[in-house]
Length: 575
Image (cartoon, rainbow, N blue to C red; front, side, top):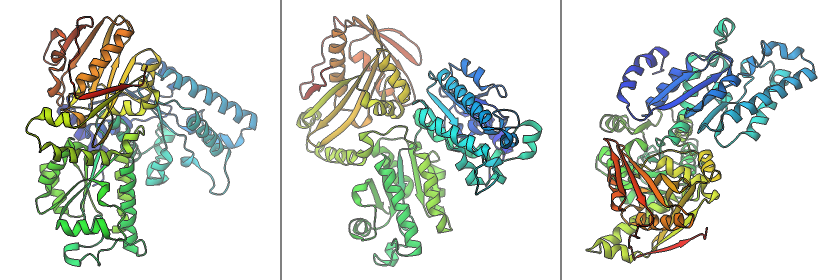
């Protein structure tokens, strides 16, 4: 069902009441009228559990208002080409080259000024210039189109790390110019775009904001029959299922598998959830010549006759992720309906009846897994979970947890202010929820600024005899005689190994070398970090105050004694 503006207005009051998390403040700056965009963005974010608070600046006042947005989490800048100067969309063809060059120079200077004013903003979303609403010819580039192209070339080459460029031409192409633009309202009130355009724009930027607020999708779960291949293996047999690139329908499923594999290589966890005989599916995954996805590409395979809801719950539990981070694809309306009823937090996608639409549906799904930065951990995430499965099996051989931990051969390597790890540090703040004392989310630009302004950013990577965990711990600490622990977190996949205690030992050693005498810290309660509510107590911090949601702590480093964990070997980068 197509979502109308009235539907959004009707739904927003309930969405506002039901979400009580920390507010996420968004400011929209524009040189055209964007009356509908605020509600569209708020609806898109609130349906993903983000407590969005949207405000819109004054009409055509971007440069001046960019000075006064310091307290916002995100600023959307919509600088419309048609309104750079009054009536540019039809006057451009009569301008001489010096006039065009002067206008381009002025606009570039304005953008530099705007971006400079917004350097403190964690996330800036800048809409690329589009000439499509007023394009003249498919064969000749007009002066107006040339101006848009040159301005885009500049912004794509010169924007800072906190700026993401939104290519609105793709949104217009998806809808058509006719369905994206409302010329009637443009001429009467400079309101150029339709609500459907605003809605798709909001959907396009939502995954970016989800990624920096800890709401990103992480897991893609796929059914098998008529989802990974055409046909039902239990009825048709291995030889008659179809996924060959040499047939019309087979090519479609080949493309779908390639899309899934590319997501896996970017760090998305792939899983199978299928009602089937396990041996049949395993044979296909291991031996079928047309199969692109193999067993090693899947973090978990639930191939049995148990209901899908139970299997999806187990997948979430075994991966230690929330259900809201899962996207589930199935060809059965019944199965999709069942999951929608009992696990509504999971995003479900039905394989389209017109199978030729399936690859496009998968490409839209891919947009949900927005990854703000690429790290080594992304490339090997599936192997990390495979290694963990072996650890869990090994654990069963021991009666005492200490004996098991001692058998692992744990090694911890510490780095300090290592700029090559900035993407991973940002990812850890955005994804880690359980072992996270303050649950603050930071972009790459914010992480880099911490380093450049003298903060200590400690990271640890860990390994054992089963494999490498990757970079899984982070602490951000302010400089000074009395330092503040802004962030202390650890990935859920290394919880239970007591690495956090050895990590803190090493942090104290480093801080003492930098003449830090005292440390202050906070535990900020969330819905997911209750397990670390007494972490600072276990390190013998003194609690200075407490209310329902926050505990404040103090530690004199002179009296701190190392927590003794003998089975963890420690290294460092020497800094």
